[in-house]
Length: 112
Image 1: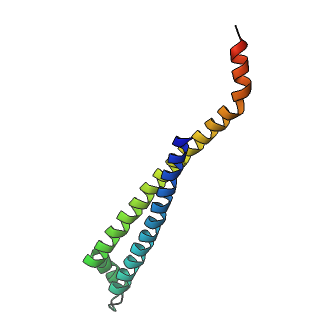
Image 2: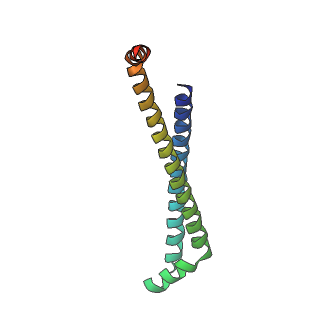
Image 3: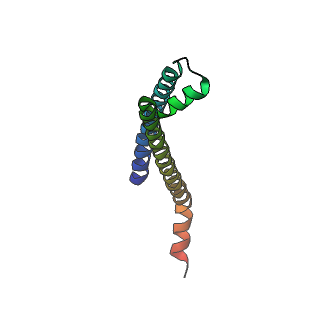
């Protein structure tokens, strides 16, 4: 039961971390879109503006920040889902053992 409690505590911790990572990702995405929009406002043709946008140092830095925050969120989300599966496995095992304990103990004692 103690192991199950620890699994749940870790699951709660990672759920909080995933939520924070989602907020960070949303902020990074908003910053990226703002930087892209600033570069696009220079009054040139669309094709030229897009080409400038793709090589602008502020946009490249914002895109890298967004990609890092997205990767962090995905990594934390997978870790949280793994912890959730572990907690579910322990819960099933505890339920199985508690449900059979009385009957199995008597039958094991009297079997030759």
